Amino acid sequence: QVIPLQVIIAAVLRYWKLALVGLLVLAALGAYWSWHSRGEKLEAARSILASGGGRREIERETGLPRGASDRLADAAAKTSVPPQWIASEALASSDHMLKTGGEPFTVLAALIHSLTPEQKVY
Image (cartoon, helix red, strand yellow):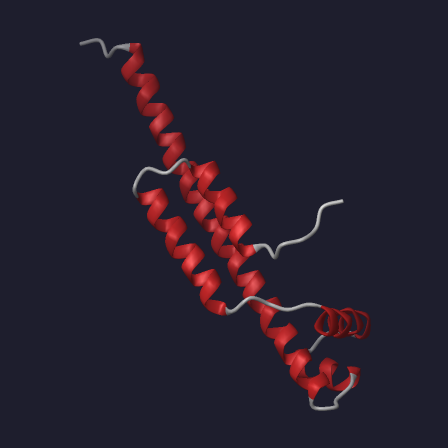
């Protein structure tokens, strides 16, 4: 019995779409954990600076080397991190969109946009 070429192509495309969705979800989770770790270090640095501590305390608390702790202290003084619930809500929303047939690239773009602080583009 011969399987029509259109059926084979549709099956292959569906497989690749599912594989792509899996990769996008893994990439999103990896980005989330990386963001979460950086956010924790940034909050620790903010807390240390607010209590009168300095860069040595930041190095000791975060385990970062000298140059990295300097950049972290500068960032802690200049930036803010959105609350943790924003990332959790964005991941849950992305998961729901993917499971209900959302286009993977659109879902990933929305996830990245929601986790990226607004910046001015010049």
